[in-house]
Amino acid sequence: MQRRSVAMAAFLALSVATFPQVHAQSKSAANVLRVVPMSNLTVLDPIWTTAYVTQSHGYMIYDTLFGTDAKGAIRPQMVDKWSASPDQKVWTFTLRDGLEFHDGNPVTSEDVIASLTRWSSRDTMGGMMARFLDAYEVVDTKTFRIKFKESFGLTLEALGKQISPCFIMPKRIAATPGTEQIKEHIGSGPHIFVADEFKPGSKVVYRKNPKYQPRSEPPSGTAGGKNVYVDRVEWVVIRDPQTQLSALLANEVDMVTSPASEQYSTIRTTPPLNLVDMQPEGYQYSLRMNFLYPPFDNVQIRRAAMLAIGQEQVLRTQVASLGMYRWCKSLFPCGTTYESDHTGSFRGIANPDAARKLLTQAGYKGEPVVLLRPTDLPTLSKAPLVVKQQLEQAGFVVDMQSIDWQTLVARRARKDPPSQGGWNAFVTAAVAADNANPITMVMMNATGAKGWFGWQDDPDLEKIKLEFVKARNDAERREAAERAQLRAIDQVTHVTLGQFNAPSAVRSNVKGFVPAGATVYWNIRKN
Image 1 (spheres, one colour):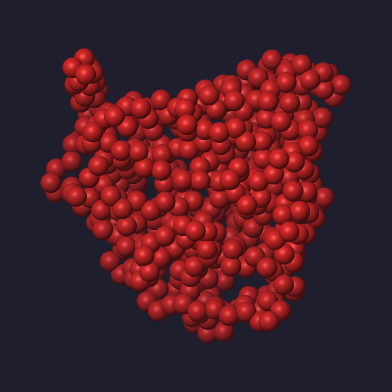
Image 2: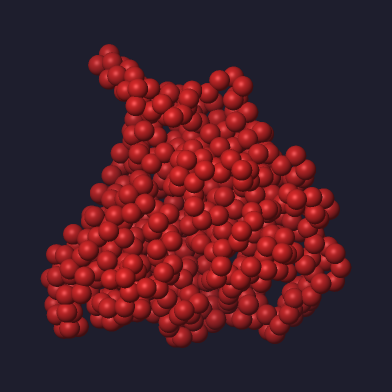
């Protein structure tokens, strides 16, 4: 015990000597929450990208029509009341009083409709809803209608989903095409983005919105009252995991959103630090491939890659901490509604011999696989190393390129050939709620050029998804989900790499975290 204390003292001394840019908090900083985000924030448009750090930014400054509570129920947020026609083709919504954008303008029905239009041009579930859409209609300043050509049974689920939600923006901003990033960042949410203090790669600042009127219900998931108890939230970008932990130990920051998994044991046993799991259902790792260029434009070669990769090796290396990961071959996360063991040829166990044989049969010509690896995201940085090794053992030539996460986020959106700045594959992670069904899972968006990064075009999968939406009962919906899974595995939309938990590290004087499918910062107090 004494030896451990000496080692810890040395560690703290080193942190002070090597980390001068962040200073210990004073009493005057008691109302400032300082957070190390999961990665640098460079893309500020939460509709343009699905990156979680940008989504967290979205939840800071925007609000949503509905939210999802901790039990998975859809609850009103900006909406006061709503009704649906008996055939569920016409939905009428009225906004609650007191909704105001940060520029002082009231939130109107026109703002909502413009936001819904832009969101549905990018989002998987929003795009599905748009297929059923007949028209949006302004009834009055606070009331609007959504009219469908045929009943869309997931209307509230679409409007209230936690991951990649429809954030409501002013009409003039939401008029920006979904293919372009917005230039202004004004919402009606509980925090205000302080644009003149934004320093990409260093700091992001938000201040409390004094005019925000939270709902009266207790906070639950992304629903209920979004009460803000600190005057200011600062995201402090620190790329090195050890330096992140040093800053937390020295009281220079209050929270590290995504500590390295090998630090969990230290955090658990070092007062005054705690682990807080804000996504208790966990995450899934996945390998996504680019369908536009060789070698993964060939389904046989994608199948060979799927055979080559084993979950256990990836999880053991990336997560390391026992009890924090689980093997799961279902594309829909284990423990969720549509989990299924019917996975066709997919086992989640590496079989390099079978992969090598299929690769030869498919006529692989040795094209290098450009595999992108994020260097500054501890929860993702090691998995690509294992994937590279496993692909090479099966006969692939792999060109792994290490870049920071925000550069990866921008690069994966490019459709250039891999040899000209594009890519062939990358590893990503999604919260369980994101992959809970065929409509929310972005990697089952098989609409080609309009789909998610990788741009798979599979009308058969899209047809199954429509059948999922039109299902008349739970049994039909479950059967459609299983068919969607089998089709996705057959065509290799992606390779699931298992499940894991990634708790945040926080100081013990910080309380009030709200578990949700997304990382949210309301209801937090500093003592």
